[in-house]
Image 1: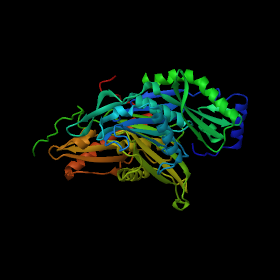
Image 2: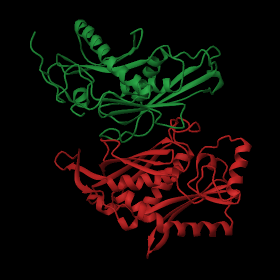
Image 3: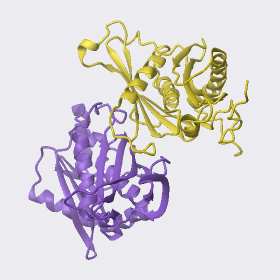
Image 4: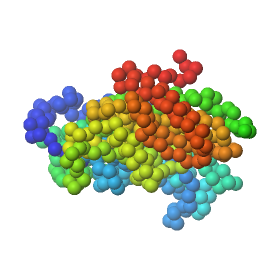
Length: 273
Length: 244
């Protein structure tokens, strides 16, 4: 996601390929790289997963705790997302406090989950006004080769889909670190997933690699779920300094509709098995 | 002398037996070097980036490159979630790891540069700093950083009066009987056999400590075997006990 230096020659080569309808790695313009999901990478987490899209890899884990609810939502559990763009994952990530890229990623993933209503926060209330479950969703970048946005979004869905509530000991007022059989309550129908588009030259592509991200004019992340049997947008985020023309917007929306029906069953399978 | 209360390990391992070890290199494709080292359910990933120009400039050393280590645990790696970002503990472990690896790394050919080593713990069951050192030494070798020898690390402990290698979480932080639990992480250089990491928390006699060093040295031979075979691309030799 950071700005990297790329020789002009490589930039020209990528654009030239795209102009002829191809990508430098042989993919179609709207084709995702291979997605590989490995569950249970961290046994102390309530659930955990590694998601790879091509060479991009993220780890995600869910931890839960019991807290006093916020005064404005006394009967709802709470949900918090963090994303660490650790310098292990890319030469362009720095140590220290989360930079704007990590903050943006975490906020977009958080909003996508929250606004779609995927987690049923009301069912995470233990005792109104006193005790609710707190869901921590932590995502760590392991290797960045582009499109961390969709990798983080998918990891969030899969790891939440797997999470079970730990046992809460009422007498000791303590969370016991053994999992109950109760799943974190989800509205499965509300599932929405992210597709991120980049504009390079005259082309609009899906699942950009690092190289492609570095030279794009803008990116648009579209979270899309099902509403009345059709694609329904649940969150949008435009990134970078380029602007979207009317024509581009139409092309992107068409790509969303075209890809939605083939992707939804796949994503549901990743998340719910 | 009275008998030790810790007569049998909860895990069923012999006192001088390490957990099943596994190692692999090349796990992070964009890095210059990377490795994973697992001891039982303690997993460490190490990534090497560099040699690269060191900023800020005033930190540069015109005679040699510098090694910089950053160790951290993932928020979900333990039972009680850890807040992301550095802590006093992680900063200390980063520094002692840096010292342990600096003993063998030769960066004289790379003045004014830094070699960054990032260690992350996705899953913790005690012994994360030694697993991190084992992974980091492999990642450095994988990156082709000049090294005079390898580094292998292990935790040795004293539970009541019994000495054991490669403590798990139960032994490290839950055992309280008798004289309690003493944890001694240590690392050895592969050829000259010198100690390049040594820490101790607890109580131990001089004679017992001598035995601890002996046991640590023996255990590190097994660690080195697993590190070396992964670096040769053969993969890990030690498989889970009882599994063929």
